[in-house]
Length: 338
Image: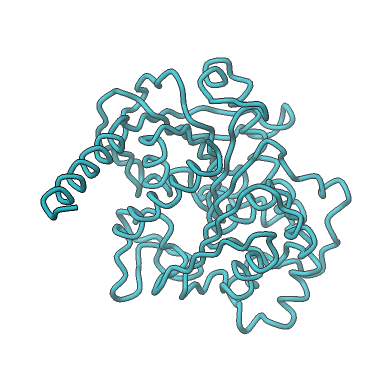
């Protein structure tokens, strides 16, 4: 092959990829999902989806949405992706990833976890037992609602297994999607870990009571798995409380990310524990990254137990990383869901 021909083919491939990448824009709308009981709070959900409408950048608190607000969705989407934020987070904190998935043809449902968001942290304060049980159940209720809505159900691609569904989560959201995939929490593991390793994993062990003086989860809580979820991505997951036996039995396709310098959930206790026990380890280490590398950079300083959410280690380019991460996650879901 001549150099000229090779350059022509490379240029053509680049044009085709660019055309594919911009086949859709991202649309955005907000919905409310009813709680499990009449007196339970509703769940706020941000929907990111493919549209042909023109997007615009809109500030929403410390985060921005680059999407067509209320734009008409396209007739068909590749799959539904449930997105779970971290402890005390927001449905808007992973907009770069959600918008990239939407532009590639996915419907992303990013929930604001009731009782565990920036406005309301009561769930963890009440007890870790309820916290680790309720988070996956909240996520499943959002999937229920989307698949029960005729306007969305008709758009989500299906096959012999039913609607195509995946899940993406960060930190406590990483735990949440692993639980949806069949991983089982055991608070005694967390209690033992924090009795022996609190000095090495101080932020995680300082959150709430980290299982101290709490009973094991009741037997009913072992049914957190959502059979509809076929593939998950867990970003810096809180994973030390998940049992080795349940991780070994996880069947959905998984991709795990760890931040090399994570101090919030120290990788060797969390992401690496999870990956080492999965049937097919698929662990990606992000060099020179802190815990919040997987979130959009807020427009203002936001304090956390691990410092400012906007901060990065010297030399770490969060914007460039998130752009590459979006490509990798989209490719993963394309491979495992389609």
